[in-house]
View 1 (spheres, rainbow, N blue to C red):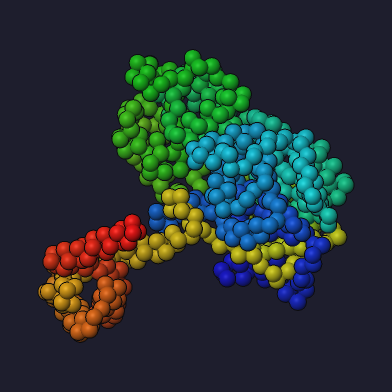
View 2 (view 1 turned 30 degrees about the vertical axis):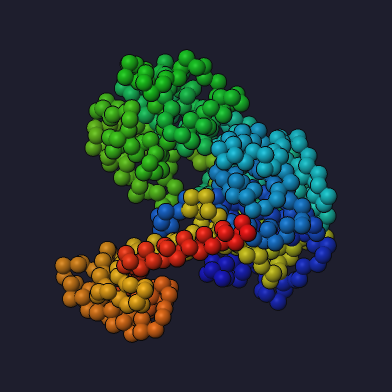
Length: 599
């Protein structure tokens, strides 16, 4: 068990003696992702023969996960319970809430996906790219929708977030009412839809057994800045800037992109979009009416060189310093259409995600070196605001919903603990707050919530390409060994007819030792392998035996000499005569099999 999970079990409330065992009539609540991390959100509510899944997200890998594209939850529990009916509800269209859907549908039979309008468009495009549109029916919902299953009755309420059509979910179960907020903030002057304060207050008045609430900004005090303030700051920059404007922001922050486009139109600038994810989001937002900018204000990349500099606004991806994103290529001077000029102004309408600070600074330095003027979010210019609730907004949610029990979700362990302290300040008793880890199970029984020692496997699965089998974990280990210790390739020439080794092996090393200074070590290693093979090949052996003998003799020798464990790759070269003899034998065998079949 991970250290965080052990700590969470200790901190989640009462000691293990007070935990109860699940009964058949209980409702189980657990997370397969989203606890102890930011991303990979996936929460499950199970009752008898039904499992209600809320969100199916991915987490983007840290730098230490070499070559990994995504991190997804372990779906094995859902696979093992294949006989249980499964329905997926989506709160909104961000990747950490919908990015795992294609991987989930590959392994688990989902009866239907219920999602708000904007999320439906994003999911359809995602599944269409993978030719999976017919894998599951997708049903559009809004704040007035009701989803009824055998054991659950689900309703929805509007929340404010950085993407349109963001919903909180109400789940009425046989054992009580559960409310999950999804990602939210309270913005009293929102750009998009306002939060449904009345419905939240009604829920609080009629009773909520368990609240599951967003913890991402638990460490930030006061209220977050309104999106309107950011819009005003961006508009001021647009008015003052003389040359080209290049604005980098999150593609998923649709309201921000819409505000930037509106400012460009108001200041007489035409817009060019760069970045595949940005192009997809703008296309969908225009189709659904969230962005109402006429076609005449959009430029193609080819038109940039024929448009006055003070009439251009470029919106691009790369606000987090991603090496292949449009802004990084602009900074490096490798972008196909954009070459930086001293009069350019680059605006970062975002804050670096924790862990991305060095990448962002690297890009900013390159932009400055090219002579551009770079503006980032600071106390002097409000170029960004969060889409997640700060402490005072979390308190307001707790006061509106008035839950009997509380479970902080969507955040690293520090954030969950901070949210717990915020809940205690609002009057929720400490023993009714559960700081859980992925896989921990809560029991809802007659509107009471209990802990249980029963756990569900909830490991990380690394996706390398489209592989979701978990086998990529072994590949990652090899990459880590290669990065730390390098590799040694052992080339051996044999004659399989006489079962003999023809000459001393040759060892080629990369990333293990400096070859010029280690010739004697490699020569000695070649002798060690040669002697081991000579002894082994006194009796008849297979190619696998040869490989195992190479590894078994070389690995301990290298470790004793260098205290390092490089990957050892045996390469066996068979003599031409032996290879020809083997091919003749195979051909004769195939001919014999054909004649036998015809007879």
